[in-house]
Amino acid sequence: MNAIKRLLFGAVLLICALLAAVAVNQTPVQLQFLVWQTPAWSVFWWLLAAFVLGAVVGFILAFLTSFKTRMERRRLQRSVDEQASELQRLRALAPE
Image (cartoon, rainbow, N blue to C red; front, side, top):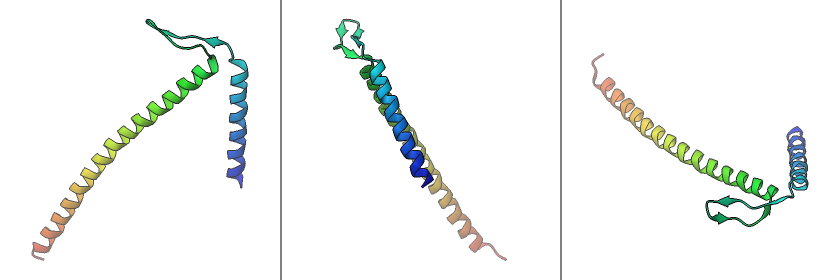
């Protein structure tokens, strides 16, 4: 129940912050990259687009990094399993 209250409070806080950001950042701006100009959007939409783009790029980079780590862990686990089976085989052959 406590977790639900915290989640609900966080959602209400996020909505309030979002509404405050929309209310404050209504000035339309036009960005220019060399010779290309963007349409005039409010500052809020540019900030939101930058945040979403950053989140997507961060998620992709985190996925790629964790993918490499998972592949390395699987390779190392196979090596450990092979060495454990070799050790068992050698223990079975050793005289007592």
